[in-house]
Length: 544
Image (tube, rainbow, N blue to C red; front, side, top):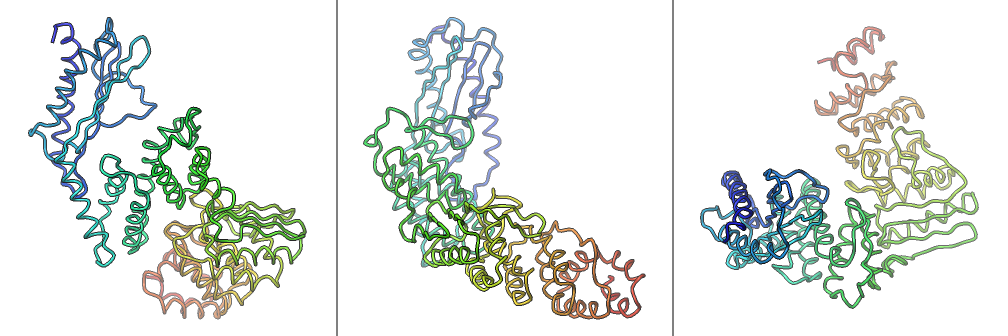
């Protein structure tokens, strides 16, 4: 190595050594929780600019434009790309390969593969040089660990449940092209096994779905879209198919995996599913084009009469309804069609496009004024449709499921919400339906029911018939639900009915009701000072 080259290489090597030394101390303290976790680092990047250099052990974001960590004024002056290729890269490869093979690092320090990137900026133009290193023994050991995991943890015949710590690594290993050839059928089979294993709880299922979605999006963006499409922006799903790509350029297994990814990601992100399918269609995938146009073909894709037009796409999870004649029969036809496609497999977590001249909404705070809400509020105006609406609600109510009529968040609601709340305000014959809904609703992740109790009381009053339902609504509130503005319990009859309900509840549920109705035991005590003696005597036992 000439002295001229050494002036550039020495600072780079020194910074790599310092970075790895710092990482070694951190990684030495890590206790792996998954047999699928074979190492930490699989990436190393050195960036050289005129004013210095820096080292990244994780791939930086596109928008990362920080200044060099090591300031060296005029660092790349006089450097040529030929020098970098012929003189820098052999030295850097020898150094990095020695580190990669070194026994000084813990077994967790490196993954089985390490990708090295050198970026040199000359005259404001970045040039990139890369190489990859492979530890074949470690790769084979990882493959054996994965097969052991599949055999023992994903075996449908066993009661074994994979740990949350396994989720991240399992998805990425199954999609790693350096471990396995692309095989959508095999991947889907193993993902289905994992889906079944994690159904032990909502929390466990959510953790798995989160890591699955992240891993699939990572594969779609880095392994598929990076080859066949250009990203228009740094964020979002804006991709444009590369103009020089032909359908014949895309291997069939890669397209099959991309279609599987679209379907899987779509279970939690309907927009991503549609975007991916549109890209696949542009790349010549007839299956994607068919799905976008008509869905899977397993349900009636449309219904048309002189009164309405309905179109459903089970792949995109969308339903379009156009009401041309505002009358009871129009909504009956739409509801019959909706119930029919639900029985044939249409998702409960759909979203709706709705065209109608009428705009009714339920008087419930926080409910999103979505197209789906308006459709059901309109239909609820026809009493003879109430039995059909109740049948619909009974069929779609399911814990931990959500309509896709709004962006995921505080206004997301369980399927059936608009119908149940509407029917609950219309008549006493649907109180049992309201009770079943309130027992099912996921109060940890849904809060729109918090304002329903006050609306329900206003619609029906607080009587021996309504108080049991009213208290069930209150108990289904989110942890952040606030007390009612007015307790409403004033008469002896009301107090007796409420006490009957309270005495059947566990202590913590009694406390919840006292808080939701009065704001807590202290405020109950204050309110009883103004109550008639018999009411005071009935309720004072709950002042604890």
